[in-house]
Length: 285
Image (cartoon, rainbow, N blue to C red; front, side, top):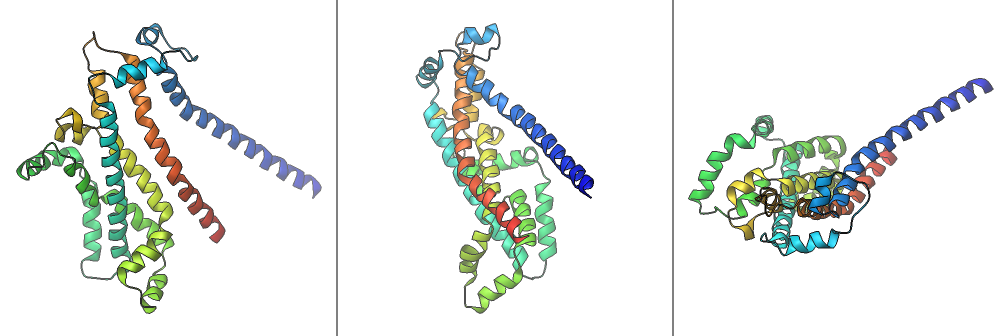
């Protein structure tokens, strides 16, 4: 018996060691490219042309000053991206959660058809509908405006599907019925009872929606025309496509590094809800 316990304990320690090694390797592969990005942001265009080095250089402030004093409105682009990404994430998560709650908590005719129809919409790529979308916003006089980039986020099939699956696993209908018996209105039940229970899922989808909107280049490039209204991905593309006399790879790396910070901050703010939800689920189990 003692030998079996020793063998079992040794096997557990060995598997744990392998798991730690794999996690360290994966973490290194994920973080190494961020390190390369920030190192390159400290180097000049000539140094970058000479090849890669793992040692930081001394051109960080110079690259930032050149970027800020350049022809592109970088700070304004950051502000535009923040507004669009924040509103997109907020609308997508709130209204998708509300739609998922309606499908989950109510029984009505056509419920299965609506659920299937929403999933069918999720399968249609943006490129297929973009021509009609551009014609629509042109007729509505919304061209060169951020409104067409924000309002469609209200209907987000992918976020809806994730929320619906999460509700099926974690939200018992008995809780909703108990709230109704206690006299709670439908909006109060959703906002004060359902939404707090959905915090982990909302945090995950808010991060995904924010990052997706933040990195979106295709639609904003077609809708926005003035430099003062463009988002950071468009400005980064313009900076990279500059003529060879003005091209500075150090500024490009600096701008990319500059554009990553808001995403990291959003993740750090929302990650505690994800960890809290996982911990809560483990305690309940």
